[in-house]
Structure formats: structure tokens, C-alpha cells
Length: 117
Figure 1 (spheres, rainbow, N blue to C red):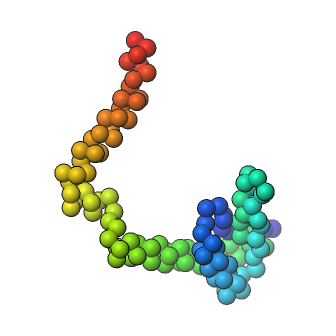
Figure 2 (figure 1 turned 135 degrees about the horizontal axis):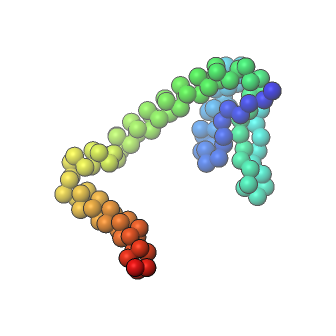
Figure 3 (figure 1 turned 90 degrees about the vertical axis):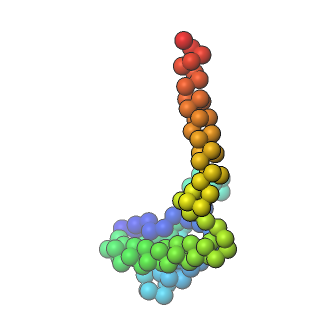
């Protein structure tokens, strides 16, 4: 019985191509379904044999970890920093904005109860 391995919704073309090549290179028996014409159903990569799922999932997990590490390195080299790095480096910039966000969310959540009293 077939088993879905990889959902193609919002996946960049280069990543989908690399996953297809990875599965083919490791001789995994797979096929692809295309998305529906109105965007209701998504495309996916499927395994023909569900017994091959653990090995295919392991290959895919390794690939995604390498891709994640590569993306993080790219962001690090090009000056992008994480939220925690920005908080450590510029707390005077982050904390007032964070307090404003919390205040706005609290107001939006509390306003109906305040108006209905």
C-alpha cells in the first residue's frame, strides 16, 4: 500500500527537485501526485511500498537537516540574526516593542469584556 512521504505544498521547486533526485539516487520506488486545479488538494511524493517508509524518512530527515543548516549558515553570513541574538545585542530596541505587542494583544482580548460590562 502506498504511503505519503513528502507534501509539496509551499515547497520551493529546487527543494522538491533535490528530494526527487535523492529518492531516485537511493533507488526508492516513489511517484508524485500533482496539486488539484483549484488548489484544494496538494501535490505529494508517495512511496509505492509502505515498508520502505522508515529508510526513506531517514534519508529525508538527513537531507532536511543539511538544508536547514545550510540556510542558517547563509543567514548568519549575510547579517541576519535570530530573535534571541537581537535581544542580547539590543535589549533597548526589542523590549519596548515586545511590551507594546503584549499590551495590544491584552487590550484586544480584554476590550470585549470591558465594553460589555
